[in-house]
Amino acid sequence: MKKKERREATMDVSSFSDIANLLIIFFILTTSLAHPFGKLLQMPSAATPEDNSQKAPKIPTINLMADRIVYTEGEGAEREITPNELHAELLGKNLHSKPQNDRLVMLEVAEEVAYQRYYEVVTMVSEAGGVVAMIGD
Amino acid sequence: MIRRKKRMSLIVPTSSMGDIAFLLIIFFMLASTFMKSGNVQVENPTSDSIEAQESPMVEVIVDADGAIWMGGVVSSVAEVGMACRMQAEQLRESPVHLKVDRNLKRKDYMPVIEAISEAGVKMILTGDKEN
Image (cartoon, each protein chain N blue to C red):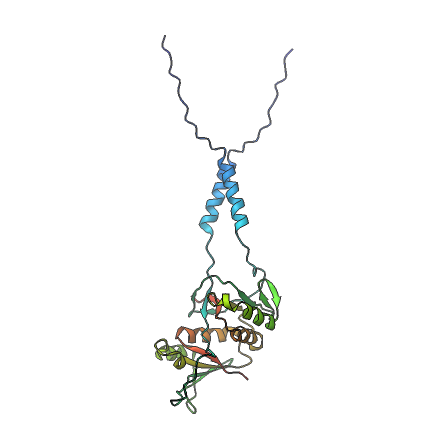
């Protein structure tokens, strides 16, 4: 009597390791370490003593509104300014080289100002080396 | 009669490679941390005056609805201020990262900025680099 041939049910798993290795290589190559972008907000320190011995310097003041920016360095010297002009004005002050007390930039923000607009101005001031002092209500 | 030389077969055992690869995958899955803020809807502000920063120890997010997120949990302005004050010592080296939706108005973002600054910790305003 002829015996029936027994079929073996085998699964070929030899390619699994290749697939796993390829997955690892893919993830290693495509992964990028998430580096957040931002700007350190320089704010005046309460511990910084005020120097009253000299005449108060003219502090640059930015009045930020929804549709315009008013810049002044003393009473009566207010002028409307574009963001690019403000950037140039702040960079021209060379605030980085000045002591902390002389780097103050006053910022007044109107109620309707969106964060995008505030963000542009604040990062601009920080880039120029300014210390942002907020004017409250 | 010529005797044939036995030919030595050179086989590299690779059967364990699959196991090693899967162990590596499991290791990376366990070692990686998921973003706590992945589900928070924020439209980032943009600026060309920003640069790459270190990953934060503490991140505060104000989402499009004005909700404040800290460590993956919705918090109040007072809670953010208190948490920053309590961690002020550790936060001296690693500033708090603040991410705010670009469309929010002053009443939504200013109290958070004031609370963090009043806690006496450094703050980095994060956004996207403008091209």
